[in-house]
Length: 468
Image 1 (cartoon, one colour):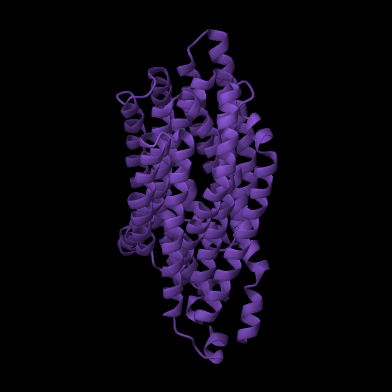
Image 2 (image 1 turned 60 degrees about the vertical axis):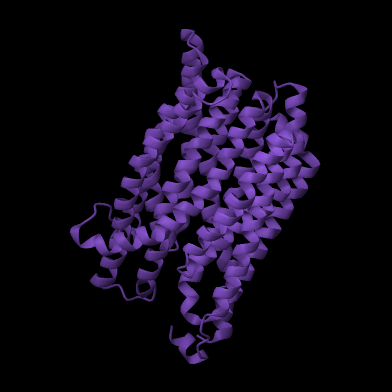
C-alpha cells in the first residue's frame, strides 16, 4: 500500500466509522443519567439539586475508574494488529486476551475503591455549608449509586476490547435498550414513593438504585453479544491469570496518568457544583441542568477522542505525516460538531432548559438560559482538550495530559471558579467563566505538546509504510 493509499484509507470515513459508534454508545449511556435528571424534577427543585450533586460525585469517581482502564483499548489495538492482517495464530490471540484480562483486574480494584469514595463524598456534603435538605438527598442517592460502579467498570473494559478490535458498534443496541429499562425502573420507584407516602430521599435513592440495576443488565447483555460475535467471541476473556502481571503493570502505568487527568477534569466540575451549592439551591439547580446538557454534548467529543486514539495507535509506526493527517481530521470533525451545537444553544436555549425546569421559578430559568449560552465556549475548550488527550494517548503519552490539567485546572480553573463565583460575587456566571478559563488553558497546553510529539516522530520511506 502506498502512502497515498494509506492516507485515503484513514480519511474522514475511517474516522467517522470508528468515532461515531463510540459517540453513539456514549450518548446512549448518558441518556441514563439524563433520564434520572428529568425524573428528579417530579420530586422538586431540591431533589434536582441534591440528586444532581450526587450524580456529579458519581461521575467524578466513575470518570477516574474508567480512566484506569481506557488504555486497555490501545493495548488491544496494538496486540490485534497482526490479527487484523490475517495472522490469527494462538500467540496473537493470547496477547489480545491478556490485554482484556488485565483490564478486568485493574478495573475491579478501581471500582471497589471508587464505590467507597462516592459514598464518602455524599457523607461529606452533610457537614458542608449546603442546604441540609439538599445534603440529605445527595447522601441518600450516593448510597445506591456507588455499588453500581463495579458493573459499570467491567462494562467499560469490555467496551475497550470492542473498540480496540475496531468493532465499537456492538454495544449501541444494548445501551439503547437499557435506556428504556432505566426509565421503567425510575418510574416504578417514584410510583412506590408516592403510593407509600415516603420522603423525597427514598425517591432519589430509588433513582440511584435503578441506575445501578441497569448497569448490571447492560453488562450481562453486552457480554452475551460479545460471546456470540464470530470474531470477538474467539478473543473474549475476563478472569485474570498469573501470567498477566506484566500487562497489568503496563496498564496501571498508562492508566494512572489517564485516571488523574480524567479525575482532574471531573474534579473541577465537581468543585463548581459545590460552589454553586454555596451560592444557593436555585443556582445549583440551574447549574446541574446546564451541566447535564453540556455532558450530553461532550459524549460525542469522547467518541472522537477514543476513536482518534485507537487510529493513532494503529498508524504511529507509519510516520508523522499520517499521524498529522489523522489528528487534523479528528479535530476538524469535532469543531464542526461543536459549531452546530453552538447555533442550537444560542437560538433555542430557553426552550431546551424548560424541558428540564418546567416547574421552576423564572429566576432559575433565566440563570439556566444564560449559563447555556456561556457553555458554548466551555464546550469548545473542554471538547478540544479531551480529544487532544486521546490523540496523545495514541502516541503512548499519558503523562503530558496530566501535567497540562494540573496547570490548567488547578492553577487557573479552580482558583478562577472560587474567586469569580464567590469572592467577586458573579455567582453562577463567574463559576462557568472560571471553567472556561481552566479548560481553555489546558487545551492550549495540550495542543502545543501534541505538535511537539508529532514533530518528533520518524518519517519512514514509502516502502516501509507499504510493508506495515
